[in-house]
Length: 236
Image (cartoon, rainbow, N blue to C red; front, side):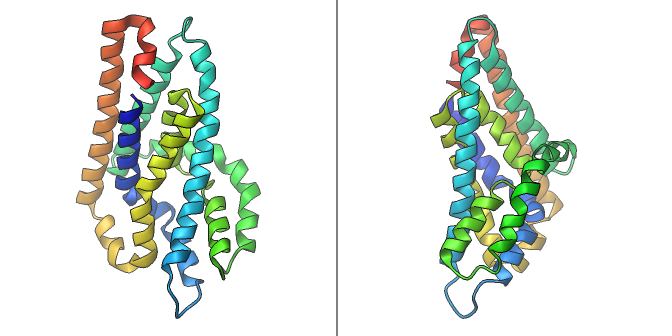
């Protein structure tokens, strides 16, 4: 169900702070260090995150549109079943990664390296960030940074089989990451040691893995009750 997907990916974004600190923490640190001094920094951080979430939303719409091809094949192959099961497996893998129990998720970050090599030079042209529009543009570009956390959630957007739902899923994920990225930007030194705590990582990872296990169980239940024809009951 789309409601479950939205709730799940929001908490993935929220609990993924242990990943965000390592992946984006240094970037946010560079961004923060180059902001104009002596003024209110909130508008810059909000603009940066707004640009990032906008890119996530666009990516979600694109993969959701791609997933519509699965809808066309649903009478022949349980495509949505398989995509939803894959997204649940990715949540489990992501949870194990956040908990520090597996590094498998890092391997999929290589998928976007080619695109990022083309985008990265443009980010340098926006530094230092001297205005809110530049912060917005920088966030929009950094939204395409190769990230296993983002790619894992994109599979859920793909499984939705709809551009609007895919965009909504990635927006919900982006909003979940918002508190973490704002906190990292504004309270970097205070949060770093707490977020890197093994107990915090383990708890966050197990919750995310639990969401994936629940989704996988939902797929199994749908198969058992509806058979191949029940694909629309899973991700619709």
